[in-house]
Length: 466
Ligand code: AMP
Ligand code: ZN
Image (cartoon, rainbow, N blue to C red; front, top):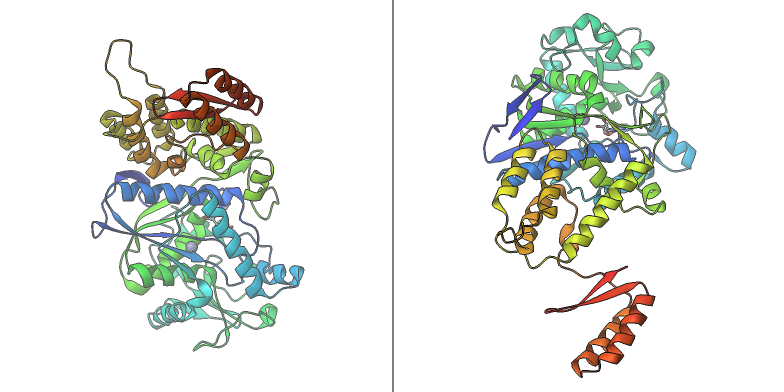
């Protein structure tokens, strides 16, 4: 498999540190607001990567964090802790808010058929690991302390900026908002590892004791601490949205490599954004739709997954209702076609090969979808041998292990008709069995009035929606 590595800025041949095992860490959600479909694009992208690795024979261990500690997120306004604010607005505790939105996140992901990680790790349940990592950094001299926080001193880590390609002098752009607040920071891009519950954080609800005083961890350290806890000092793959490159992931590298002295991640994979009217869909811009909005407009969540499969993960995708409608139509058409297929047998080797070639080429899923449609539509020319539907059925199930469109539910299956229709279908079968074709014809018309057609096949009656 070939994959684009943000660290080297090249498409590289994937070769894990300890095959066939692959350690994959995907940055999870901050849980103070609803998961939107922009998030879903990123997590579907991760899911595809994981499925491709599994299909290629690797044993993937997939770890994901949940940022349930309230602090300044990259999205937040200066001094604004969104989790604390969300709790106040909703009249709930920060713990309740975090739980509610974590549940909403995983429920949203389930609906678009994203496989659950092998381990979900909550930041609040791993304070000990974060403190341990911090102790190591303090011991090794990579930190300094002010009244407000303990910071990572980026001037002590020569590799700082290697992921984003930014020079230290330019790092101001990536600096977080707390820069402005704490005048004792040495460099704007130095980042907090531990905040003390003083000053503006005096009333912070979430707090823990530490060897340096009561407080709570900074955002970046949770990902370093938890990924290394579950996957060791060096991971094969780490993913995130492209917004994570210049700050969050740069900081993760600095913390992890400073502490362990080992390379932190072999392949960095970053997903492009979902846009709406040309702008990034985001919580703070309030230009977002949730999976419930999609369903309330009559769409199937898997039509959204299909839509995301039509764009390469490193390309921007502008969301429109029209494009979602086109995806819903394509998915409906596909489901209708495969209902008529026979039991899966043997498979279509050439199409499978072409499909895998596309997905193994830096996850070219749009190309893989095109291969799938070529196969679906292929008909042997008159008088020539071609793939029977049983072979296509076998292959489409293989392809769907990666696409994740739940096609098995439709393959060779008739439309689920209401009981009223099924009753008429059974009566018609009886009439045919007793040779009463007049009655059978009358029943066929009644079935049609209810919106279904019935076809007679050697395997029995097949029902289709009109
Ligand atoms: P957050 O919960 O805001 O930290 O976001 C969680 C993940 O979703 C991050 O990896 C973001 O990069 C990603 N993300 C947020 N908004 C979008 C978007 N509009 N399109 C794609 N990914 C996004
Ligand atoms: Zn992270």
